[in-house]
Image (tube, rainbow, N blue to C red; front, top):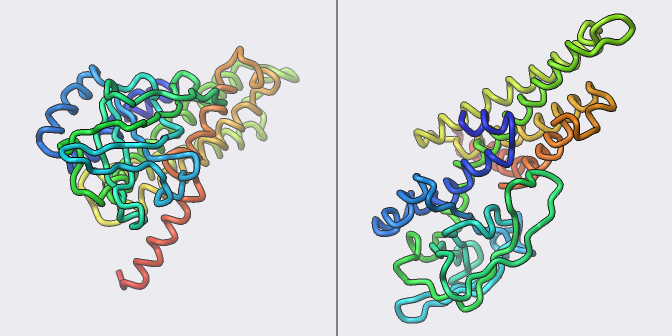
Length: 315
């Protein structure tokens, strides 16, 4: 609800709310008490921001093909590689980094590590110039012989893929909440404009064609909100089916945000295409919700696989 309300006005600001939570997910769920006490209080107070480092130039949706390596060397692991599309790049105090500890084991060879910003060899690379959410930095994080204490291994070696997917299952409906907030802000602006703008002697909100667009926008938005709230409630209690519900929520909410913001721009006509109104920004911001933390296509794969698993298991 917090992410939704902030995103209603500014999608970039809503990212500040939940990206650090995503970075903390594996630490909270599987980290040692030492790691939890080191990171979580500072993250909760805002003293530290975090980044979640999974994607690479050639390993976006295909996580198992990541090339970042972590090699055990006594009481340390040595990390080498590059992570891309990292939110909070350059401002985070810590990063949860996923790297291969067994290059031949595919997804079973991935481990998770806490890496702090002042670690020698840890640096920020290129910062992206983006279409939307421009108030939040996105860029590369580089690892050049970064020595990470063995105590900063999160959970078990080789279990990182499961931790990464678990974190995304919890975070995807929150991206859905961001999408719902963007869509609500766009609907708010469209309602205000159409009830003030007059053409042919009437407010344009009195025209049936406009009313039908507004009705469809509001209905899709409410359906998306209910899917998001249901998925968040399931994630909160660890209910069976959370992964499918989370994917459905993100898929439908992000597609709704894109549709509603596009329609809102249309309702404002030429004014909607200018920066005098916030809708062009909302439309640009909405697009990324269909991409990050699993594209809409990946969500459909998750949903279909879960459906088929349920059928074969007889549940």
